[in-house]
Length: 216
Length: 189
Image (spheres, rainbow over the protein chains, first blue to last red):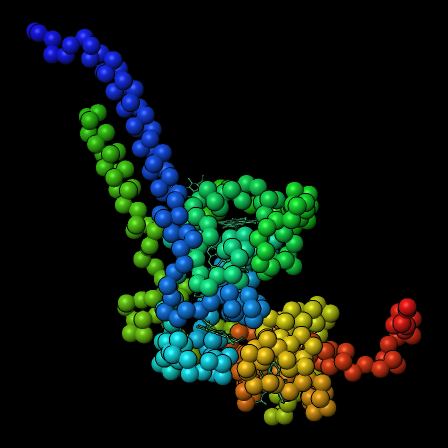
């Protein structure tokens, strides 16, 4: 049988085998990069809400404590979102006729809750519990960022499993005194390595990385 | 035989890819919306005329701040230092936005236009029985909203205790200070 390819084509053949390997690696890297990108995890994208509720004003400028609205965050897995009644504590008098707040008044009159768009939403096969994290000295801003500077809420972390594990393996990098869990500055202090080890000792912090801790 | 095993495992792994079902499982999470119930909420309200186990509230003193119909003059449980500390924390969260941290009634929300509440340090409120504070928190009063849905009853008593402590702190005389502590109050240049 006559040769189809000229011997001069040999380098091409070698090169294309070589190239295929690179192409495969490149494709893998690209999928990795895409799934990790903010575009895919939808982090750093402010979500639209039925009412333009701002944490920047309510927590930042007015200085309301997180627990004023997220009342169950210390005692239960679920932080809770405020019922309309909580908004009406103040908005019966403040901006009582503002068109912006029409959905709130509507909800107050009909008894139908406001349908907030969820921002942080783990897959249903993961168990998460706020109360234990607060009791062991993990602050809101470690996971939710500087909420008091967000006009609309956005997600500041990927919520990947590796993000959870990153801290469960080395909690001393993030832990802070229990009194400071509601403080909003998320930069750890300069002597975090020392403070961190001390607090891990004091609070007996031993986060588990067993699969069944989070997948039950 | 070998091929069919391969095929089966391949099928299983394909099924594994069908992950959305696991991410959003057919159960109701807290506060989730529901297409099933008429009011659109997965969380069900109590059936009218029923009481959840452990939620029976017949103790007039503990839950309504009344004894024989009049505002109670005593606490329903012993107030310890820990209770006062808890009261301080809760006061700062729930009351300070309007009443401010010393109770003068000049909180952040008042400065933005809410009707100013009276100071806690007026004679009428200094003389008021402790049950009055509990009642105001529980039922609301005029422009003051009810805090019953945000603060559980025991915490409301602790806040009341802390408000009493605030009143004492703003109305203390030198004679109230134990003699061994008085030296500390002396002005030192």
